[in-house]
Length: 498
Ligand code: NAD
Image (spheres, rainbow, N blue to C red):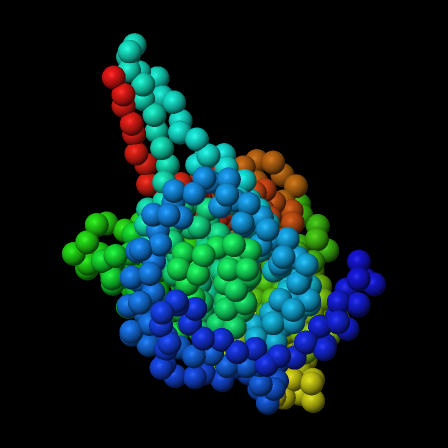
């Protein structure tokens, strides 16, 4: 509620760091580079620093993880689950510190940072519950008389978790807790931009009872530390969330090893659409598309990038969209009045600026949020904007930021709209706004996407309720926060006794 939010906002103002981190690898002291971290909302503000893992530290982490796997895997699943549940309690008890870190290092708005803590705690508890259910006891299988057949699940070995910056706590802890729950030893490589949050999350799990060799933290560059891990033959599996291009690189590295075939759980990019027909309510379309496209500065894999709106209501929807965008406030993510915070860094901003320059020439601008440069001048801010683009073909490349593209369609063009969405090859989220059952049925049964949302926004999947993950270029499955996710982190063994 508002009072609680206000109290929390005041409390975190006092938590300014500095936060400092180095690899958490027993027996190693890295001599890697020290990287200074600054606040995306104000680049003059130091947040802390971290030391990257050098090659000797990577090697030691792998050796530790191999040695630690067996004893962790032999623990009863209920003991591993209890540790994860304890970590969830501790995370909630210390949420002020984690929220402050999410705001300062990742530029998260306060509501987003609070949601991040909730989702991370949900993952810890959900995978603990699933571990008890799936790994707690062998499954007795039917067989011939006089023979007992049992199926056991166990950890695969060393799992490497490589995560993105946009959900630096929830996705990071989601991957790590799934791999741990299933009985793997884990090496966690956070995104470069959010290494301090990754460090705090690993410390939390250590304090909750995960042994230091079972979960190690290796900050550093994807192209060096990440690549060194994924080409190592001792690695039995990789949980990766990030761009489709990086997933390809990891897949190639794993395939090139002269080693047992590793499991790859990849959750990747999207080019997500929302389709609205003329039976839908314009107010609701606009409210949901503004949340889906601009919340978190559009830096969600699930965000809507393209709104396909039926021509009869298109003028009205575009006018209302421009009005709603004019109300958005871009600025300091630590202020409750802020709707849209900064984008993560200069590289991300440059891609958006270049894309907007192209759109300014090729499309019609419908809306742009005004930036108060006094409030945003020292940060990596990008004003949210919306363009109307001609023709039915949608964009092919993921634009990761607050840019929405609007396309009009005629009554007989629905199949073409769905075809053009499928033609991107991505298949993450799809929003549908319609009050006609046949239209909803047609779209949801013909669009190849992992998560479909009808008459609501398409962001913010709830763990255990809306398992999340895509098809095609958007990921391998199974869905995170769903009942089958842990199985991908497990090996299976049968025991037949005559
Ligand atoms: P990214 O692919 O640039 O980086 C992700 C991670 O991969 C980082 O930790 C990075 O250091 C590491 N990495 C980079 N190169 C590597 C290599 N060669 N070998 C091993 N690791 C390497 O992605 P990002 O910019 O951090 O995140 C944004 C992307 O993540 C977007 O495409 C977004 O759609 C996607 N995403 C997807 C989901 C989902 O659930 N499908 C969720 C969040 C983000």
